[in-house]
Amino acid sequence: MLSLELIRNDPDMVRRAMESRGASAPIDELLELDQQRRSAIAEADQLRARRNVVSRELGQAKERPAELIEEMRGVGSRIRELEDVIRVADEGINAHLLNIPNVPREDAPIGLTEESNVVERTVGELPTFDFEPLPHWELGRNLGAIDFERGVKLAASRFYILQGKGARLQRALTDWMIDLHVDQHGYQEMYVPFLVNRDTVTASGHLPHFQEEMYHDEEDDLWMLPTAEAAINSIHRDEIIEPGILPLYYVAHTPCWRREKFSAGRDTRGIKRVHQFEKVEMFKFVEPETSDDELEKLVANAEEVAAKLEMPYRVLQLSTGDMSAPAVRTYDIEIWAPGGQEWLEVSSCSNCTDYQARRAKIRYRPEAGARPRLLHTLNGSGLALPRVLIAILENYQQADGSVIVPEILRPYTHFDRIEKADS
RNA sequence: GGAGGGGUGGCUGAGUGGUUGAAAGCACUUGUCUUGAAAACAAGCAUACGUUUACGCGUAUCGCAGGUUCGAAUCCUGUCCCCUCCGCCA
Image (cartoon, rainbow, N blue to C red):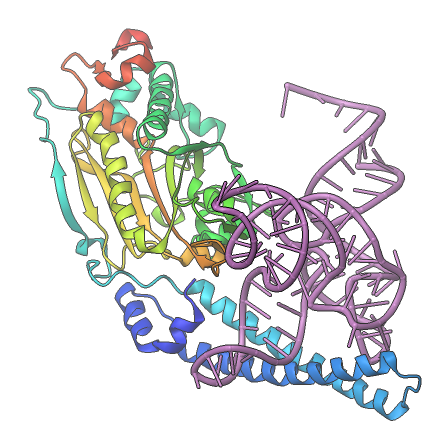
């Protein structure tokens, strides 16, 4: 959520920013509602001040003049009218503000589609094979690591079963990634609810922007996490962080659920785009002045996962039109998948500045006695499964159809190769 | 799920319709005193909105949302959460 003050003070800048994202923002309606709201507040406050004085006098007086009480009755009903005006204006303002995305950083690549994304760097050599590398859905099936048909039988299309060493490889990846971020990058591990309430998904910006993508339990109005970001953001909702605490680094492993409504018919083979997947998510609460630097460090933490798995990857900076609503700058990490001959998005790291903090009312006190300020939030996958699993299967496949386990995972898998005989 | 109890400022805890944003204590900050510290004493110590060049002023907030009233922390309704006992249960 943007601050109303920013929109009031520099509406043209906000208009330009929205244009660069391909978003519409009803700035004029907002300013009009703001005007209505403020004049109603001014009048209501004056009337209440008058009523407070009179009520105090009446409380002490022996006489209760009927005409004065009659006047106050009128004052009371006028205040109620004004309160309705204020409430309606507030609701209108809020509804608009919840829909307006963040203002991108000045130097973020401008463009409305992913075509305008910029490749920041490519790390590692693309592997060459002296045989035809298979896509992961064939490898997974051949090795008995992935069961697509039964996944569909249990649930629906785009669901899958990992089995045997395939399941274990994913579990090893998860454990290793969490350990890396906790032991070497200074994150605190968190286990969070996988179903969260409406306030939580609104605070993160997933409502209203991502509503169609989330699974929703109507009976209790609970929402299945589309990402741990939504949950972690609300850990400090409605709090004031005392001096000396920030920055806070959290990492959580959760399942993520997405309807993939807008991807119908796309990536239908394999487990690249599925309704349920696991993710290790990093999240930071930081002081505003540090958030740009913290984003670079966050990306470095995520990149390290790909680097240590010894797979080629590249880092993109997303264009204004391709970023999610809360972000002012986003880097994606993509690992090369030789079977499918494509770059696989395995991480998205964003600086959301005060966008989520304002929605969630998360503030911090710079020093004892100082006024609270909104803090900045950042999030990044570190990394997303099962796409890393796909990348491992395809990058580490051998001529005989087996798959070697990346060195660094072997203490976690307790095996170094997945072979056909394992199925 | 059934029965009962309870939600007041950073914490503890008064307050049942009228100078109560809210007693008191603790914690915290500053000052006095002290060689220093402690103790003692004094003062300060919430958040948001509106208004103001500024000092400031006004309004709101006692889980949340409505209602009654000239006036609500206090009365009424709904709702959320917590605690105790019973039942059920990974």
